Length: 323
Image: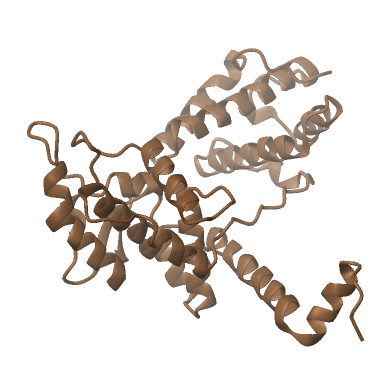
């Protein structure tokens, strides 16, 4: 039987799903988009369990039932990445039921579905970072603003939403720290590098006052030309525009500066747990992906510069060494 993707879950499954979604929204602070994706996946699973396995409550579901749904997804032509995402939703949901004592076991733990390999995040080289930081030219208010926001993004590894919500009260330029409220409204202190602090101070003294508009401007640090807070879309466009000016041909998004921040810190010898704390990751496993990025970069550098690495690379490219 093909999985149905058209409507809400049958009544016997609804209460637990609603409780789980409320937990995601209130306790973990996930975005509305992410919560909606969890609900769709669980509703789809519940409909299949009712129609194909005659299950009517989550407490009656067994591992074989869940395995049947996963196989049905694959048989229906679902992409491997999509199946992996749905399987992850199931695992998270059943762990929640276990914590809430609505089940005494976790049938999803017995599923053997392969977890999707994590894509390594894209990063910029230090040379590209230098060009990007130098892209906003001039001494007008917008140039001072853009130089400061690029420096802060790279120096502190902030998410774009955290940068957009940064307020003047969150700054401690004397001590070199930012007070950041991340996912789930969790507060953390993030160091601010000297260059970023200097660029931010120049913007606050000579740029931001020229963007302030009476009645429109609050305490937000980075302002638009109209004096209001910069939106995340505008920040994304600004980063892309300055990357193009810097001659960086690949697409650059604000999150790439966050990835570059973490990867360059790790390459410089920073402790992984310190990077986790600065990024605001709840789990160290999320931060560990940067070790793979750093390792890949080392392999590339070895292939480029080591004499035997260059020879191997030349053979792989099908070129001949001159005698």
